[in-house]
Picture: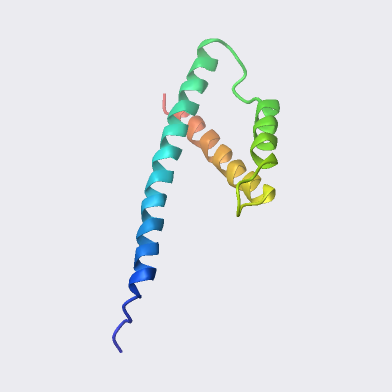
Length: 97
């Protein structure tokens, strides 16, 4: 049995998703680079690395006005994961020194 070739419309949508995924990945990498710079600044200036109040305010702000078709819970979960992974990368960076 031969694989079925997707309709051109479906293929075009998938290409759009692939392009968006690439752009999202670039933005996530840029965000992590800034997170690492913030962490480095905090270490050099003897500031607390973890700021739960800043994190709470950021999550509240982002989830308070979710763009369609997202809802507040989805936005919050996405950014909670992004923050968790950023923190993990930062910790790995600190341990590698």
